[in-house]
Image (cartoon, rainbow, N blue to C red; front, side, top):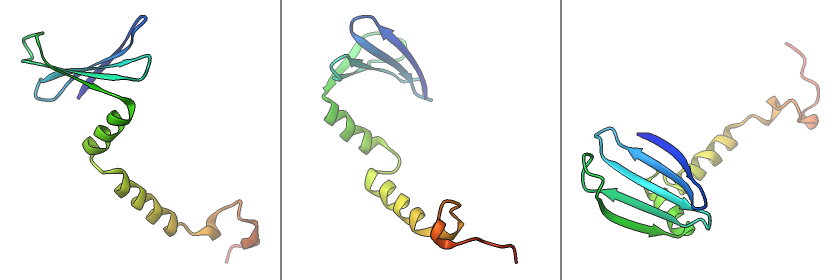
Length: 102
């Protein structure tokens, strides 16, 4: 997806998004944190088909749905990776004592 970011003075930040298939939408994040999602009728038209207004927490929920891996799955993956770390290889782990080459 191609995303162009621009500042709208006094209002917020506008993100113009174009998907691989050429569909366009915009996300306006205003200074209060409210998000407005603008969906266009067609790539050739600049007519807004729909506007969706989201508060910050709603935007977070939508982002979690749209993310390729939901937050609980990402946390579980991080926990698994941490469990796999070998503490003895941590150079700051003083309790492991000096490691001499074999």
